Amino acid sequence: MCRKLRFILTIAAAAGVGFTAPALADGIKVGMITTLSGGGSSLGIDIRDGFELALKQGGGKLGGVPVQLIVSDDARKPEVAKQIADRMIKSDKVDIMTGIVWSNLAMAVVPGVTRGGTFYISPNAGPSALAGKMCNENYFNVAWQNDNLHEAMGQHVSDKGFKNVYILAPNYPAGKDALAGFKRFYKGGLAGEVYTKLGQKDYAAEISALRAANPDAVFFFLPGGMGINFLKQYAQAGLNDEIPLFGPAFSFDETILGPVGDAAVGVYNSSQWNADIENAANRAFVADFIAEHGRRPSLYASQGYDAARLIGSALAAVKGDMSNKSAFRLALTKADFESVRGNFRFGANHHPIQDIYIRQVYRNEQGELTNKIVGKVFSDHQDAYAKDCIM
Image (cartoon, rainbow, N blue to C red; front, side):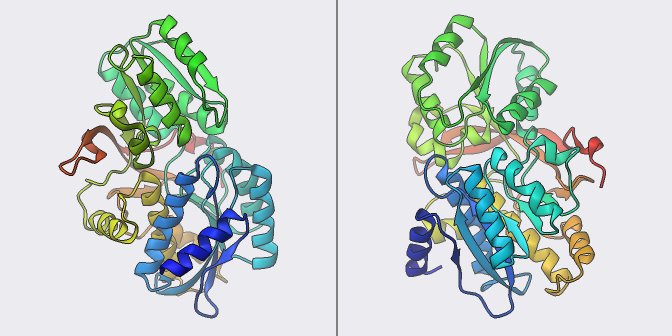
């Protein structure tokens, strides 16, 4: 995308309005609702940039089919996301929707969108309700079900022999899923279980209570700016050398490591993706993303990229004709694309079955803080809610 177009898109997003990227006539319309301003905006920006990279690689097409991408900023507000979704469906008449970062926004938007017959491809939020009893044939999650990375860390912490862990996460659907997932595979006791305010900035009270509980380890899920603040305050309290930290990739991704600095070095985290996964699709994605944006891609960028490539695979299968929704749905289910993760397929509830790894934060040869894979916890891992999904 040229700099002029990027500038226009950024201004439109900051103003909270939609922007329609140029596309060929009669193209498929994809509506992207994501967080581009305020707290957590780095996550939405990376999802958008990953998706747009796939679109640019295809010359404005996905699967050889012209695609018109309409991007709007939800500002991390459910009511704004719902208004945008309504406009995109009724006025823009989008064929597919994607982009939502936060699970509370997904719960506000996705059920109505999919019941109305519009396809929704999630590049991030994977609340348990949408994987289980509220699953829908038009809903696909290309990232993970919320519990998955936390389940892997629960297993890893148990494997390492920790028996008295303090756990905390924000008080919203993904936070509750996170701690439920961790506890599903962690075999020890809990020194404490705390739910913080979504968007919280000051963790002095939580860190004081944590210190008093005297755990042998801490597991936390605090994405975006929440994680940055917590990690800095944890280090400032002098706890880095006393109580080891563990978390999911969301708390130790590229968007967080720079602002946090050396406080994150050596910490282990769980992820289904990393830049050092060796396959052709991932090598090309990482190189092209760095060339396009001058920064290393994050987990969120990889998910936006895979979401676009999934859509492209299905559009190619139906030759761009979405009038037969059953055929398009079947093509999505097959997930016939090369994921940057390597092994990837959908379960019966349209959520991924995939490998999950342990990463460690380190400084590479260029002095950049990043992650390297140091082990695998699960192979072909499926979420716990698929059994409750009836389509």
